[in-house]
Length: 96
Image 1: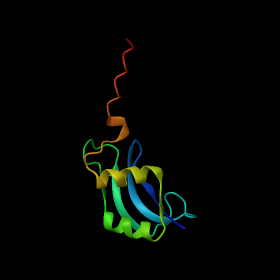
Image 2: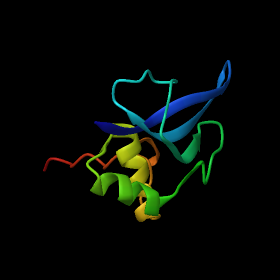
Image 3: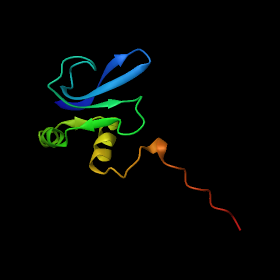
Image 4: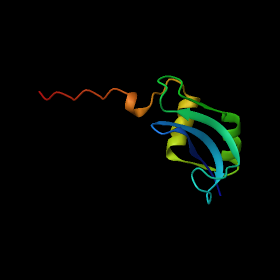
């Protein structure tokens, strides 16, 4: 089974990730089939890029995205969405 997940690159204290299609039996940073994009945790805006055509191809083939990659795919398809940690909390309702 193919999974779409993140592979860690970069140095110590500066995590960067490649979004890859990989066999589910391979380790996190091990062998992969194809690089689909990247994600950099240190950049504030536009901190990821995904090739949605290739992601759609792999999803049609039955690939399962990880939870984090699925949220990045949603954000790539709808740029108005913000990450959950950047959203403001809803104000508490006041009791009368």
